[in-house]
Image (tube, rainbow, N blue to C red; front, side, top):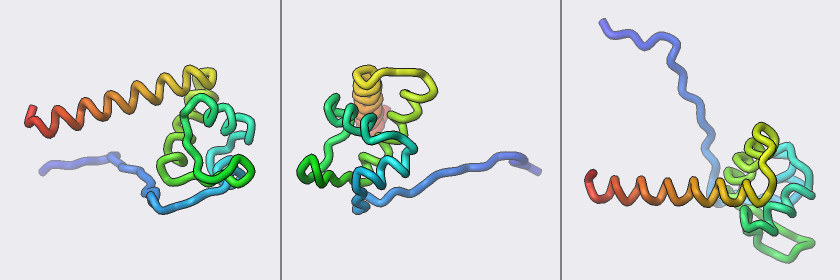
Amino acid sequence: MNRMGGLALHGAIVEEEVELTLAELCRACRVTEIEIREWVVEGVLEPTGGSGDWRFGGTALRRSRLAARLSRDLAVNPAGVALALDLLDEIAALRAALQRSGR
């Protein structure tokens, strides 16, 4: 008999169609508007709309949550957050390419 005691999977499904305001994104990630604005300047996030009416999609929500963890838990500055997320994106792209090639 094979038992998988204590194994639990947790996850969240984030719709790509979701659209959040700046205030909603701040609440969802427990960060300040200043942090979000810094991440936008560094290219971590790409909002739609004008600066007074920014909107953020599901991808921005995921990236913001990761950016918040890097910032809060590891004291990474905004430029470092941008670099880390760019490198993580590149790793994901390389893994996908390897998988497509059958390796």
